[in-house]
Every structure is written in structure tokens, then in C-alpha cells.
Length: 192
Image (cartoon, rainbow, N blue to C red; front, side):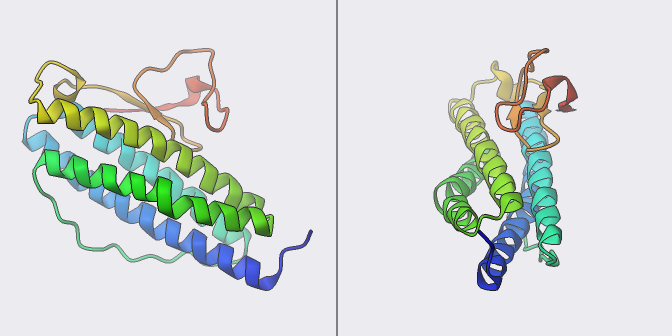
């Protein structure tokens, strides 16, 4: 099946929207990390830094797919509103849920219909990584809401990021593979 010009144009537009979204999310999470550090939540700050790195990976993957389709990746970084850490976590969770529920599914459906493998791959990888981010943000919200100073939210922690798809986790078991893209876990990056 060949991809029509209209399908290719729609896929490039969707990749461009995802590219800009991920770049803005990366900038937002970087700012949120600084606020969490300032408020004494080093584990939450590490989570925001890890998620920011994952969003950078997603944007890079989208940019690469745009280039493979002979498009040009463009974006605008929007002003960032930084609030208290708890509010920032809620904003982050809402953003991840939007990507999981509303943004990536139609982008993925369109890419599948157009049979654009590069877009299918990067949309799938990003959506699966965002599911993990949402789970981690939920845990952090619970810890901060209850002002739990003992769990990981208040302790310096390392997160492990798959440099191919952006999957994020706390503990990496050697001799295993990324559950999203199958990269050996020994190649994961460590973010503090």
C-alpha cells in the first residue's frame, strides 16, 4: 500500500504537533525540577529531570521521523508557569493523560492507516513511555499530598531512561530488555 500525499502531509503535521508538545513538556519539567529541589523534594526533582530527558528523546524521535518524510521540524517554546511542587505534579499528570488519552491515539491511528512505520514506531514508543510517567507522577502526588518525607519523593533517587524510546523506571534489572522497544537495559541512562 502506498501512502498518498494527503496521508503523508497529515502524518507530518501530527509528528510536528507531537514534536512541539514534547519540547514544551521537556522545558516545563526542567523548570518543575528546579522548583521541587527548592522545596525539598529531591526525589520528585529527579523524576521531573528523568521525565524531561524522556520527552527530549520523544521529540528527537519525532524530528527524525519528520525528516524521513522530507518534512521540517519546527516548534515554539511557550511560557512556563511554575507553581508549588504538588500543583506542578498535577499539571504534569494531566499533560501525560492528555497525551495518552487524546493526542497519541488518533495520531497513531492515522499513521497506521497511512502505513507510515517511522511515525507508528515513535508514536507507540512515546505513548507507552507516557503511561509509565503518569504512573510515577501519581505516586509522587500521593507522597507530596501526604507530606511523606520518607519515601522516594523526598530522597535523592536515580531513574533509568531508555535512550531509544524514553521509557522510565527506578530500578533496572540487568540482563533484561526495555518493555517498550526491547533495548538491553544495561544501555539505559541514569538521571539523578
